[in-house]
Amino acid sequence: MDQATAEKLKTDMPINTQEQLRGSNYKVVLPLKATSCKHLLWDPPITTEDATAQLRFQARTARANGIMSVTCSDKEGFSLTKNCWESITCNAIAIQVSQ
Image (cartoon, rainbow, N blue to C red; front, side, top):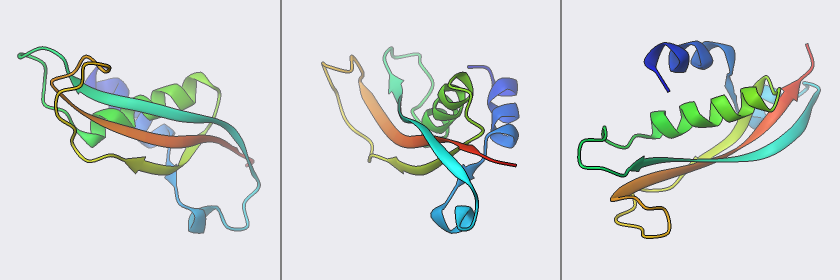
């Protein structure tokens, strides 16, 4: 994902906390999972920001207008199943908040 798209999603797709949603009307769209993966030596470093940008993109694709309950793993080393030298995985829930 390019930097411009990631920045636009950051403003268009807020990360909400339970406290922020208190009293709001919202519905759960689907659970999300994204991984920032360093697959090749010349890939950029892994970041939670990269994984979070992927969560926002997935939520937008699912026609959600927000995400909540974002949790990210600690940096993980080599993983054959993920095909990564190192990675960070984030989970969240895509939501549709009524305006």
